[in-house]
Length: 387
Image 1: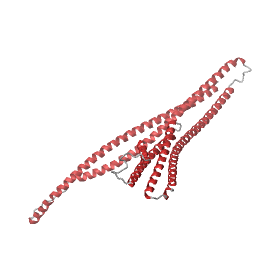
Image 2: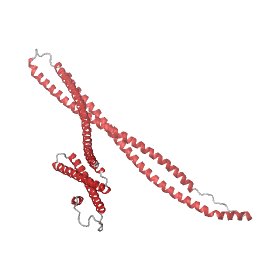
Image 3: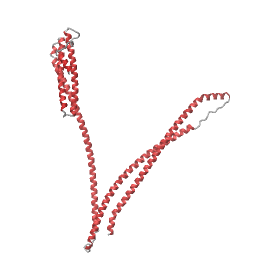
Image 4: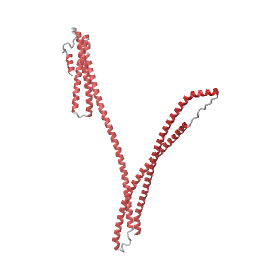
């Protein structure tokens, strides 16, 4: 800002010695051109400062959108806005001076009348561009707020869905509770009905038996309440056993699927193993050696041709040996992998057998519980029949 103020003072006629004149040029036109150059340099500096202040104002506007109640940011924004307006006025003044100086050197006085309107339009253009940048910053802030609201709406929708699920679960629990209460009421009604049926008919004729019968009725009612509690406990235990059996069935099915996949892989590896063993046996089988027959010149010719082909046969033999070694290595790897898979298959079979045993034990336990539950239900009726 000090540099711009110095240049602005230079633009108003306060020229230091040696800053405007070239190397002692006495012509007035040279002074005017130097003056115009200085004004243009000052105009560039002011334009850069305006752009810097606009960038700072844009950043402050974004911060104000995030925290609108911060008074410090508002004061900084106002300060930057005032600085931008002041520098824009300085720029307009410098542009007018440059236009006056340029038109004075050329002698075009008629253009001086048009320069104020041009500068006014330029000021309006700068103001509009500033307003446009401010509106763009506001739009960005509004877009961020809109995105936040959209995220909140999505969270609320997820919460509403969760609450609906909880409500449906609560309604299901309420229905189950009402059904269980209805069943308990029916059982109590039947118990009371049976108790009323087993009251002795000869009460009027034998009044001395009333205390004993009342005691028996109380004992029967107590026994019925105990049976109801035992029934509830057995139902809870039965439910837990059913859940455990369902879980065990799932584990057994998963183990079966895994066992099937492992069996397929073992079959595939065994096929590959057989194929490699066949290739290896074919390579290990001895090749027939060339017969050497010496029958005059024809035998000599054959020996010379066999000597020529000896290096090629040696190369083929070396290649076959290398291939045999590679196949043996691959075969060993396949055997190791097959052994590992076989071990996994055995483990999965053991796991499946264990799960099947556990499942069978669970079903036996469930059958015993059902049997004991039926026996407990039949017990009070047998007592009533005996009385």
